[in-house]
Image (tube, rainbow, N blue to C red):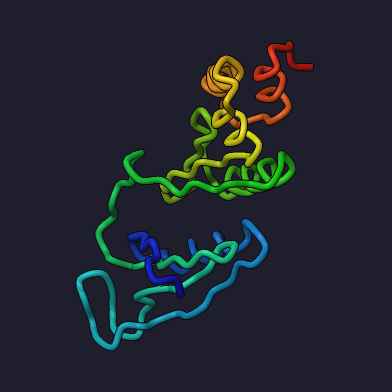
Length: 162
């Protein structure tokens, strides 16, 4: 487990969410399922209290805290994908799992957790020393829902996307 692990609050379906999240990328797994030794405000004795899980080497926790908490854009899980194929794969899995596309690479999963699905190449484009190209790529991103690296690259280069 990482020294710092995001802990995501669920209303009794943390194990279901963790089992879904570990399907998103390789090097992902359920590490431990902890059951409550006694009744507590969020559940019953012997029910799943917390799930430690790993997504692509990063540890997380799913806590069945009880009362449903509404997530918002103030905290999101940012996933840096190696290429467009990985962006497309993860995006589709979240959608197929009951998610909702938002804008600018943001998507909500069926529990309301916000994700940013970003191709690594985009980060390189907006961090480029070519300020005009970086601005064009950034403006192109603002018009997208799921990020498209080829279109972002074309915008960076000042070319129309194919």
